[in-house]
Length: 314
Image 1 (cartoon, rainbow, N blue to C red):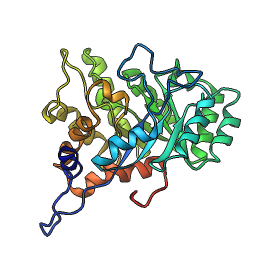
Image 2 (cartoon, rainbow, N blue to C red):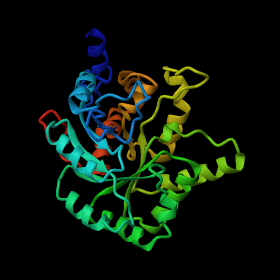
Image 3 (cartoon, helix red, strand yellow):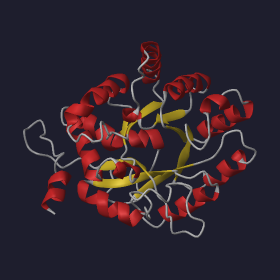
Image 4 (cartoon, rainbow, N blue to C red):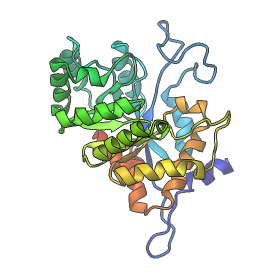
């Protein structure tokens, strides 16, 4: 209990007068919910993943995250099954720690428009995730007029698009996407996890594309997937991660970085407390106002969620 209390208070910063002010509340913009015990099972994680293959439900998340200062979370889809959009929304309705959900719809599919219209009626539904997962290819969709029209509908509905699992191709495709639809809010997930390309030419292209994205006010970068395994071990000191985090700070600045844990997927690299501590320590060198933006304010701008509980920041 002492360790939890220490971590929860670790982000109490001095004010201009030198007095210690309250810890900054946290909105975790990237968690997954699933239940392998359902009769139909789950498309992810696989049964052979002993770390992940167990129910990940709001109550379990709440017990882990709230002692560390987390006040709310946004659920990101981890299933391509259409019915799971409704399942996650119904689950979110049972626990006010969930302030929003991001579902899975396929732009360009015949059912997209009807599905989007139905799901957007629920105020917890905040957008969709696409990109490098479930066989999707956002670059391929850019040549599909129906997909572009569907993504335009997403923007017109004031909903956002998460792009998952960054690669050099996905970053280049994100530039093309935001060229075509500058009005669409886009959040690039897990950028800290992307390995720098070994090919110098490709590395230069990625850097140039990230700089372009960093200049676009509707593009956000998510500080999720921070922990990494290197040579069989997971470093748990900020010094290892700081160069990558500094790079993202330089590119996107304090106004367009958003914190997310990637729980429970993050359990494969370390505890929830471990990954949050790295981000907190990184932000300790920034102003309190900047840290507040990353830990919760920017998530409001990116996802347009509304508070469901008195403890959540407004």
